[in-house]
Length: 372
Ligand SMILES: Cc1cc2nc3c(=O)[nH]c(=O)nc-3n(C[C@H](O)[C@H](O)[C@H](O)COP(=O)(O)OP(=O)(O)OC[C@H]3O[C@@H](n4cnc5c(N)ncnc54)[C@H](O)[C@@H]3O)c2cc1C
Ligand code: SF4
Image (cartoon, rainbow, N blue to C red):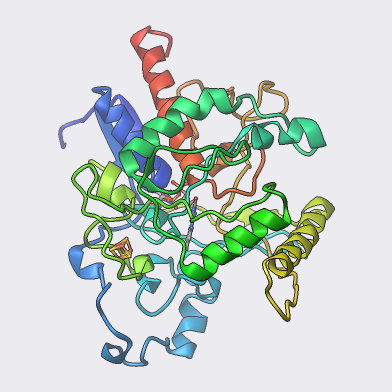
């Protein structure tokens, strides 16, 4: 019989959240094992500098193979001939949805998870988001506020490296920024006109991204090849693989999921309003022939799945307490999107990372005090 290994902590998944959990737990000195269902990504998997003319179909995929292997994944903008290996094969990873509903579940199954092909946009949430459920009555109130997570945003951002411009906006708190990329001249004109048209109430700012505009924590600055979804051999954008992951392994054998998810009236109204506001702003900056539209895709394609094991202050209405700890299983912490009590306008992954770092440090404190 093989030697029995004992661990203090088990991390399930090595993606955005799992990578952070592994990093924080090992830094606190615990023996940790990461269980990962996918395989390793090797340097040969990075094809940043492979050109369309180097590929058989010039970057297009064989349609018959695509419709058989990745009919759902291929609806994602980032799943192309270069990057499709980072997306699961739908025929090998089936799931079902409740009758009459649809859900586009975009997944990556490899060490690093979807941090390999994510869009890298990172925006802090503010109290407008953490208090939204309380104010509008949808869902349950978050058990935390911005002040609870602010130091953890700082902690995560200092490590991953975020480029962006400080603007002092209450709804989009400033971050620990590396130097910003610059707006091009059309964008600068649009920024000036929009600021003027809305009296400073709205503004255009450069995207906030987990991409390095200067060397940072041993990783090289971006050289702007622009093919990030294919993976980055210089590790210039943040991924678990490049930055947080210390260790790896394993295979999977899990039951297929049945998803119950539908847009509600509330989301449809927001979608309509977003379209109107976007058209009005384009008009204000001088754009011509603006045609507004509403893309009514099934849920999922935004790739920001949240909820299902939400956090709240009351065990009657939630699975997790305000520290991402399961009410019913005290040594189980869920820190990915499952914990989110509501969604927001901002992309969520940096909030998962900050919540993960916060939860891990709380859990290890509890262990140190013999309370877990
Ligand atoms: C194309 C694209 C663009 C995106 N753009 C952005 C963006 O700009 N900003 C943003 O904030 N977010 C973005 N996202 C979303 C972001 O990638 C996810 O929010 C984030 O990766 C979720 O982190 P996670 O740890 O929960 O899951 P993942 O990163 O998906 O990691 C899950 C890991 O768990 C493993 N796993 C699954 N099942 C098991 C099992 N049973 N046992 C063991 N391991 C298992 C998987 O193999 C995987 O490694 C984007 C996603 C995609 C695909
Ligand atoms: S982060 Fe920069 S260097 Fe890396 S793939 Fe993206 S554009 Fe290229």
